[in-house]
Amino acid sequence: YALYRKYGWIAISVVVLIVAGASFNEWRKAGAQADSEAAGDALLAAFEEAEADARSDALGAIDPGENAGRAAVTALAEAAALAEAGDLDAAITILETVAVDSNAPQVYQELAALKSVMLGSESTEPEARISRMNGLVQTGSAFALLALEQIALAEIEAGRTDEAIATLREILADAQVTQDLRQRATQLIVSLGAPPAALAE
Image 1 (cartoon, one colour):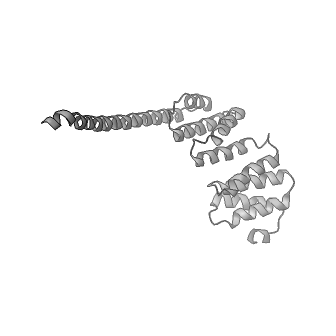
Image 2 (cartoon, helix red, strand yellow):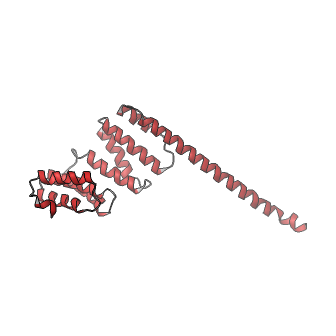
Image 3 (cartoon, rainbow, N blue to C red):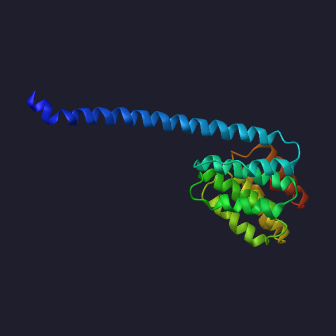
């Protein structure tokens, strides 16, 4: 009894801390789930907007909270809506922000970089685009083949036809190439005047 009176408060404190910790953890999980559901509902509501301007406004008003992945997805969707509305500068600004955001998942950073180069193709020098896309190719990005396609287009613009054909053949030789990309690469090779044998080399 004397020991209990002297040290019992320690055991009680431990129990209280355990219960409080468990309660806080459940409250945090419930809060995170509620935030996710609210953000999801807001995204769905934004996508239902028929006009691109209204859709971009709705997406820009969404608070993604502290979830970096959710913030990146929302930003990418907003950039797409802005591009559709014709505001390429604003779309590129958002994409560049995501591309350099170290907190965003890498796949979203890479997708943002790719889309930024695609949207800015008319205002960016071919060599700058090639350098940017080489970064995705060399790191083995999930978008490496699409990056190669952008490199080939930039090489064509720069008048480097032979290099463009070689880049397009590299796309065709990859086992992961999609049917749509294969068709685009093939059409480009033919349009560049390459002999049919170039497709099989």
